[in-house]
Image 1: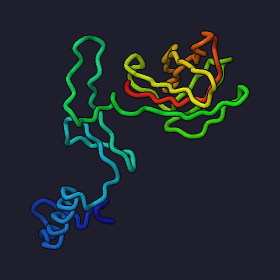
Image 2: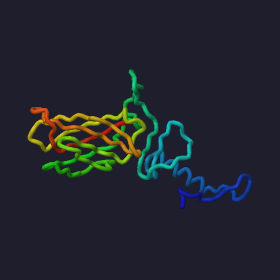
Image 3: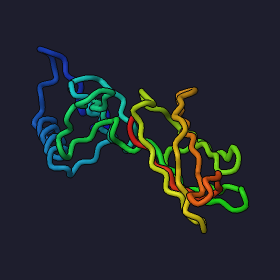
Image 4: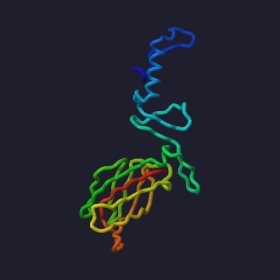
Length: 186
């Protein structure tokens, strides 16, 4: 059904003649896209254009990257979105007596307590380069002031695992706590 299939099939130099109905439908669809009054299945922004792509339904996918490993990294125009600056995953986890409860998140495959104050969160996908990721960990639901320390980013089976410790700032001992983890980049 239009617009996912042709209104009419045309052959060069053959019949049928182009109909005003079809031309008006094309114009209406183009105007709807430009004026944001026509929904799209998904959008792929690849920096080239004209490529045949398969967009993720209901999503916008960007393919350009601006991260780097030397100074200066490539300048990023304000308001521009690049794949290595988007949210890769987030997890909100509560803790009680060493037991973890995943209360919500984005792109999370698994959460593991490896030992007292030692955690790993595996995301459902991985970036191109784990060394260009950044993680923010905010401990919560704890009486002590707890400090996080990321110990590694690792990619296996196309999934990123972020491992980290939580320390009691007074005793410097590993401490269990709930946490909010956000991971960007790659």
